[in-house]
Image (cartoon, rainbow, N blue to C red):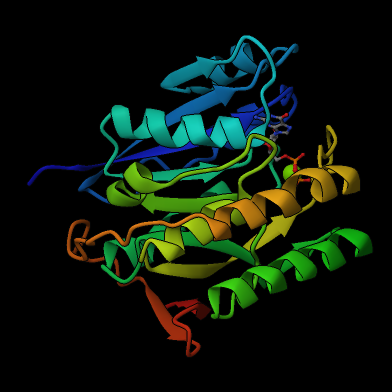
Length: 266
Ligand SMILES: Nc1nc2c(ncn2[C@@H]2O[C@H](COP(=O)(O)OP(=O)(O)O)[C@@H](O)[C@H]2O)c(=O)[nH]1
Ligand SMILES: [Mg+2]
């Protein structure tokens, strides 16, 4: 049987201190029928991000000449993954805040044919070190997305997500500043099945966050508006495209929206 190719991509901007460790801790061999490759989207870093990433085992590196923004980097990650022949792509931040060891958990609903788009949820899992204003901002923007989608989501700003090939092909990000909200609105409106998986999150100990209050007001709010106003076409989804046997390592419990709320290893 043909192996499924999973491409894990990392958008990175000046992350020399953390990207090596993130890449090294990506599980490469968690299932016989899965092959894992790593792609770095270097958004014009001026430090040694590229060198460190290559040394840590990145298989592909795409570098922008100039810094273009996280939305542009993730758009490129989705497109490159598709063009490199990914069956599934995973995106994970390069700053070490998200648990690469939990990539198999994130993929499980896709391998079970239950979702086309998964998000690691910090609010369903554990959060260490998030400041109060960031937490409130997260609640607010997650609530806005829940209202617009008419279904409950727990963490709309996660930096750890997975996409089936069809989701990769159809995903659109309408602005360059970030992707978090508009990408989910876009995919869910197109009919892709989203599921959140609890993850463990640890706020970065090196580097600094690029998120600013001003950026959110001037870029994110207009982009959400732009996304929800544009018409999108529903996609006919192949729900059996990625099914794998023997992924039942977890006992899943779900809420009424289909989000995983408990994931215990059997
Ligand atoms: N492409 C791109 N990525 C960025 C930029 N700034 C930060 N990042 C990356 O985006 C990810 C999340 O950024 P971060 O600042 O940690 O956001 P936060 O976790 O929401 O505070 C990290 O992997 C960063 O390397 C940028 O200007 N462009
Ligand atoms: Mg971060």
